Image 1 (cartoon, rainbow, N blue to C red):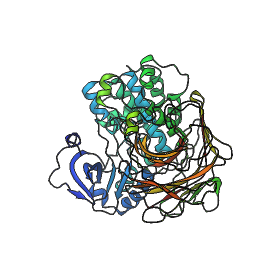
Image 2: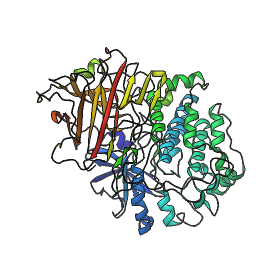
Image 3: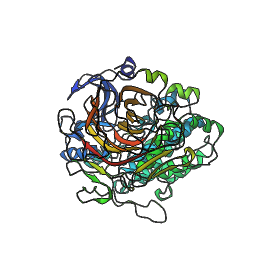
Length: 607
């Protein structure tokens, strides 16, 4: 833990806990309506721990809801959100552990430096809309989106404040008489009234998005600063003050702040409009976004993820089989959709469970310079991305002599047992012969596609990596196996695992070697090779070979056709999803690149 992290926290107070479970608390990060947030250490790594208020924790109903809602929060894809790491609803007091985001809040930055530039504001709009898109896609409502929940740190945008608001409100009756959780200036009109608990929907978060953007762009709350009843009355009856915002963003903010939820765009529609191809943007905005491909890549992946995202209840059979194969556990029904009364959103008859972790990350330095430092794209899906440089190639570890793998086209049906215990049954299984858990993706601008021709075929007419949209479930200890075919010279198949946001481990399968690397550390693009494992028996063109990866704690093993290729010990990444795509070995390789995948299986090893 660095001194900077310690500096951003306040000293612990008498009566504050010093340890919760395995977490050592070292400072206070903040306090809100649901409890206190502490900076803590987890084996040296900084994390944020939210401890629930004692009066709320006393309700068994809260603990029951809390337990279920944490499971939902852990299913939210890691696009522009701070990851939920752990929770103990049975502890006294109950607590929630999330990824620590090192950066100032949007409210602090605006107070110190004034409104954001139009370029930074547009990037902020995309980041928060991306987060809301995946959160709403998971059946979750944030309920308390505001500038203090928008942090500014390097990398992809993130939104925090873990929510738990639904469980708290349901058990404490809006905390105390005439009070409710949330900051009035960012609350939607429908939240003021006797039926507020009944009518709240994702449209309330869209209203908060508009209010946050108005504050960030003007330095003022759009309905003024006064006593809560006065501000609430303005929200219900008066138009927002948007003086200072400029088109095209002003028009979108105005739509988001509509009094009628039915008149507001959905979070996904916000994202679609912000990213619409061919739209006219001011030159400064165009230039800023061009320098932030990682942000655009996260938004594109969030859009792809929400097309098929599903949540599965903990403790049930979690096998997901493509095409609805018998044996797959059905996902619980999503929140009841709003009644359609003359628009997209009507009054809601029932409410989704609400737990969310949101914040958009920007650095103070980036804001000062006029460009938000979201880093380079880690997958190349929005532009060319650097492949490993000479420096990163120089970090390649010397290889041991692996056993010679057999030359065979036959693929074992399951990945081999690795490390100390055999994997359990698959949680994901897909032949990849037709769209199912993995989806079609076409990017004409980059000449890249993910299509199906008796296999998942990834074709790319330019250099750089590319990832195909697939399941977004995150795993800690995991094994993944897939049949790989290299269809053009110089092509390498890529398998990412423990991949969150734009960073994780990368396995690159080329004709004469298999390479394990970290991808995206710090900037969403850098590749550092941990080990290159030469293949004594190269993979012939158009020949299928089965690659299996196993990650248990810090031990990562790679097998080819049932034979061990190599093992690496590394602790850079701990949790994330499994992704398939392509990534040429060097910048000297010339397109077109074409690889194919079939018969993928993913098994959780307990994480």
